[in-house]
Length: 253
Image 1 (tube, rainbow, N blue to C red):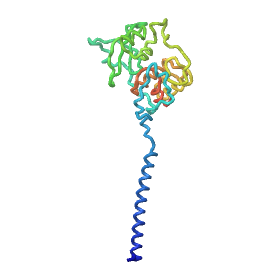
Image 2: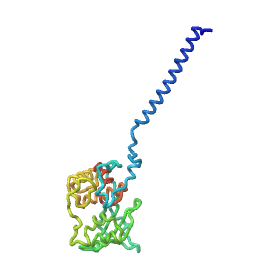
Image 3: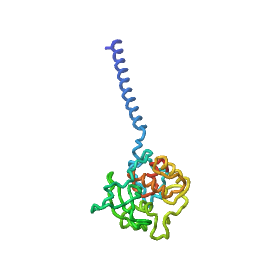
Image 4: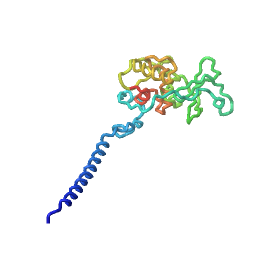
């Protein structure tokens, strides 16, 4: 028996609707796949699958060989927000309750140093105080005749000891640890470097409030203090070297 025309029309309509549904499903899946492949990469994930925050901070001395041009900028431009460098009444008391009679505090990189008022012209020692969990804590007296002694017996970070003492046991005079040298075109910057990259570093440190002195093109003791303070605030290794993470935090390389 031959199919009636009305039945044929009915079958054609059903087939057409089925084809439309199948095409829509295929088109939808294709669109979804393309969308997934073309999705923007997550900026918080490095190309090797690790987070930029996991990049080790400035190391000494190997960091000077690092190509900092590819360093990730993992921080927004910081603004100086450092603890006040003031000797409180509770800090000015020794273990027996007697006053230390200390004055002239100076601070860098989470450390504060003060001299006894009994020293009329020169002191061989200064009191070391460290910021720990938001509080200044006494650490003891530091021998000031050479920074090697402060790093060895007292345990100060070398760059902090150099900033505070500025005297080498191997040298003949104060400031003999500061030896100007032309900066490298890439890599870390450190005490003694000078050139346009240091000038850019000084300008960035000044703009964010870490550098108090006038910016120049020399990585001097003022720049060193500013770098130490920046590293302390950002929770980086306080090594005094402006390496990939330190430079990257200021938008530099």
